[in-house]
Length: 294
Image (tube, rainbow, N blue to C red):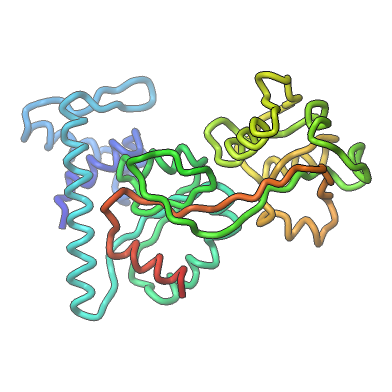
C-alpha cells in the first residue's frame, strides 16, 4: 500500500545504493532514478547527493527518510492486522542477528516459522551486536537477537537462551594438552572478533573483572576477524587461541579439528538476548516470538 516511489526512496536511503535498490524491487536502475526524480519534483528539493559510488541523504532526504520509516511500519502493521482478521498471516518480518546466532541458532526457528506462515515475507541480516542494535534504532529491522550485554536504554532486551564462550586451539597444535591459568592468557596468541562484537565485549569485560585488560597488560591479540567461521578456519591452520560460542563447535567436535583448552578460573557464560525498540513490536514479530516459545 505504501506509495511505490516512497518504497524505492526508502530502499535507496537504506542501502545507500541505486543498484541495490533496483535489485531489491526487481526494476532497472534508470527506473529507480526516475522514481527519485519524481519525488524530488513533487517536493521541489534534492533528496540525495552522490559521493563516489554511493549516495548520501541531503537534509531534506533525512527528514523524508525519518518519516518514511514510520509510514513503512504503519503500513506493515495494517497488512498484518487485516490478514489476521481473514485468518491469514501475510506481510513482512525483518530480523537481524549477531553472526553466531544467525549462523547456528536461528535457522531452525526460521524454518519452523516459514512452515507455519509461508505467506509472510521473512528476511534476516547478520552483523555484530552494535550493527544489529543500530539497525533496530534505524527501523531497518523489526526484531533483533544479540550476544552482547544489554547496553542501550532505547532498546528492550529479553533473555533468549544461555551460551558459553569456549577457548579453542587446533587439534595437535602447540597449545594442546596443557593446562593454563588466567595469567597465561597474557602470553597466548589470541584471535578476537572485531570491535563492536558481543563476543569481544564479553571477553574483555571478563578479563577486566579478573584484573586483565588488553590495554593494561598487553594481551597478545594477533588478529581480529569478522565472523566465527573465519576464526575457526584461521585457528585450524595456525597455532593460536580463540574464544567462540559452544553453538559453533558441534561440527568441529565430530571432525576433531579443534580442541577446547583448559584455563583454570576462566568461565565465560553469557546470554543471548532478543531485542526490540521499547514499546514497539510488530504483529509478525510477535508471531515469531511465539514460534520460539512453542
